[in-house]
Amino acid sequence: MTYLTQYDGITWIWYLALSALSLVAVIANIIAATALSAGHEILSNPEGRWLRLSWSIAIVYYFVWFGFTLRHGYDSDFFLQRSLDLSNGVAPLLPHVLLFIAIYLWSLTNLRRVHLWETRRQSIFFTALDEQYRSHFSDLEEGLDTGFGNMFFSKRSWIILVLVLSALLSLRPFSHMASFEPYALKYVNVFDLLYVSYLLLCTAFLMHTLLRFVAGWAGLQKLLRRLERQPIRHAFDRLPKKTFSWTPIWHAGGARRSYVLQTRALECLRKLNARAETHPLPDLLKLALPNFVKNLESKTAKLLDAEAAGFLDLEPENEACQQEDVKTIANSIARDFLIPHWLKTGASESLEPSDKKDSGKSDSGVRYLRCDSPPPPDDSVLIAEEFVALRFVAFMRYIGVQLRNLLSFVVAGFILCVASVRSYPFLSQRAIGWALTLIFIAISVPVVIIFAQMDKDAVLSRLSDTEPGKLDRSFYVRVFSYGALPLLTVLASQFPAIGRFLFSWVQPAIEALH
Image (cartoon, rainbow, N blue to C red):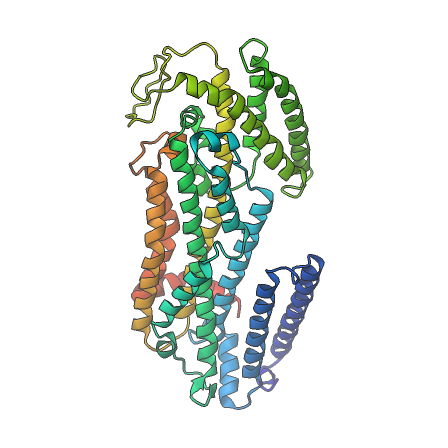
């Protein structure tokens, strides 16, 4: 109040009202979070301890910062004046605000991760393929469910997190990131301790998300490698590339749900049912197909009606339609029809099909023809393979959306951490710059390697109509889209001229907040 009364007119009333509004917002959020946690019984779950820990951290931060404002004297008034002017270059509040934005984005990322896991996860529980080809798809699905559904992506992930924090502490952040704020308690600067602790916490969140991203791709890569050694791999060659390609997932709007795969699977099943009247199919499959079509039509209609009514991803029919009927039907088709056919006919990678269209690209051993060439007029096998392949495509899409969600936070979180460190004149700026460069390299190397592995993968190349084992244009597009801003941020932190040029673009927005 002493500081606010120095302003003339209604300026001090505006700041006082803003402070009161902020306090009301904090209290309202705490009450809402408590009510939601009690309503969903989160505190009684194993995740409840992490919620209590996060509340404790937030309360400690709030009271420590509140203690900063209660101190009297010229230093305290100057501290408040700099805090309210975010564009002066020495605002002590700005680096904390940027870190809290990063933590807020981390929270949103994890909420979306859990939401995707609850509403959009797909099943590849093919017991028939597991028994015949030793694929162990069920084990891979269980591991990926654990990685995306739990707080920690594995039982030993906390050990990795401790090692990461130890490596960060070896850089001696408390020695290099020293401020000139007067809040010292004996030999410890409370302001520095508070900021560095929250910076380390945000960096731990960043690295944990990156490790979850790496673990998620590792699980998907195992699935793709096992698919490549099974006869179902040939079905991916025939799928339309514009509809089922993997690449659009990483483009703007690619993660938006459209239920195209669901409706395509229904159309494919109807086609197979129509073929059952004139083409030879196993008797068990012929008897089951009409009920399969009827059940899938009913569930799909409910799902599309819910989407039209605006309840996207909220209806319980979503999980029933995706997890039960479709996987049961696909497993029955694979067990009763496809596997006996594959074992009887075999396949050859060297024979060229007579009706193959020249795409202008070398095959590199990814196209095929069955041994009984020319192809038989019976296309029921192709329809059945397409239906089963769509299950795997849906699973790949789901994992791809999860990976994109995680990587988006890694990029945004790193940019916010760098901007937070560079928004305040800490000591040892050169050492801080080199530390940020090392962290950038530690993040970018695994991401670039994973992007390269995605582009070279044989199954994903079949879906995208690209050459396996070679980098395509989409690889460089992904690297640029996700790496350009972090690279510019690091360059701006190392070279002040670049930093001043970039800051000139955002300075008007910061001044507008004052």
